[in-house]
Image (tube, rainbow, N blue to C red; front, side, top):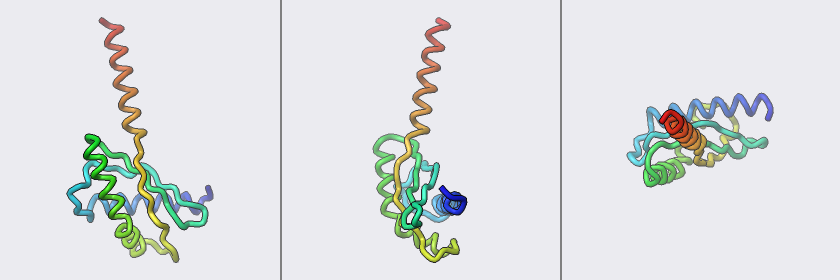
Length: 116
């Protein structure tokens, strides 16, 4: 990745986080955090990785809402960024935080068994 795409990834991530926090009004969106953005080399698309806390049903609803809102978010980015072409947004679920939580829970259980 070049410095340009790294800066663009960071800028897109910050703008999308701001949009989600302040302007999106969809009640289906639960507790979601944008963990990273990966822009393609040709700047035609950007994968937006989102971590969602909640039940499986809440995660599915949030992913559906974010996927449905992707064209709107792209238009909003067009108003905020000084780019000739705004990349198409592809929303993906990031389960790394959930996996980390599971590992910590297992480690605590092992520790509790060792002290018993």
